[in-house]
Length: 353
Image (cartoon, rainbow, N blue to C red; front, side, top):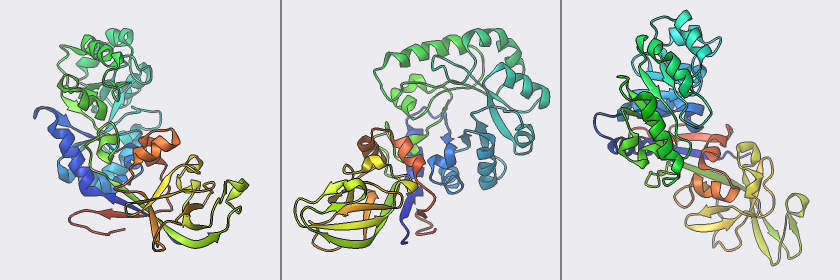
């Protein structure tokens, strides 16, 4: 089967990081969130591009992701593990110089007993009720923890993609109440928090989805393109069906292109009879059901038979597809499968696979 190509613009990722960095005071450090294999785009290449752009601190979800980032970057840059110090991670945290963001009493105990003196940070829960110490726990442990010299204290906004949501100000007030005067660098803002304004920035911001071209950073440069090769063109007469379960019936003579990708490649069945592919600037609707490996597209209106059609690109980004599927751009990005030929482009390396 012909191979679909996922193009990743490393210069765009670097430019998005610089743009988000400029939104903060020069004294505020801008990190980069590269969890989930850099949101599905390949952490090894992405972190090197971000490091060249100036990023010196990276956030991952689990220690194993931190190992991959450390292998790509070598010693020096700081790598923070958002899941904290999990059971079984002690050796990896020590050997690879990872900084766990401790989020529970159990993790605090584990870290201080097994790796005394090793760098760590602390997560606080300011209302999201996900990870982090609650106010009562922090009040009881703050003196002990501050004596152990944490490198960072952070919390996470629940509704930062909605600027007017009252939860933002409520969490900000709680974060101040829990941390003012502690004398430790603080972090509160991911991409959405950066856009809320400088009062949310503190000493470190940690953009994630905005680096990869996603909302709420609407001024981001597009990062990904996805081109699907046409395997076959078929003429369909009025009344004939296309795809499983008679998912589409032709009302007039039609020309149908079958392209090489499907839900096994992270392209949800919710795109069936709903999403568009593009031939340059010309939209071509998906007709029939998205199947495991194939998608059928109406190209009757095109002057020439295309060799490929674009699902992601200048005409349609990850959030446009997310809107069709009733989800978010994060899910579209992280669902992109491993069968695509990944093509990384930048000013210095064009077309490398």
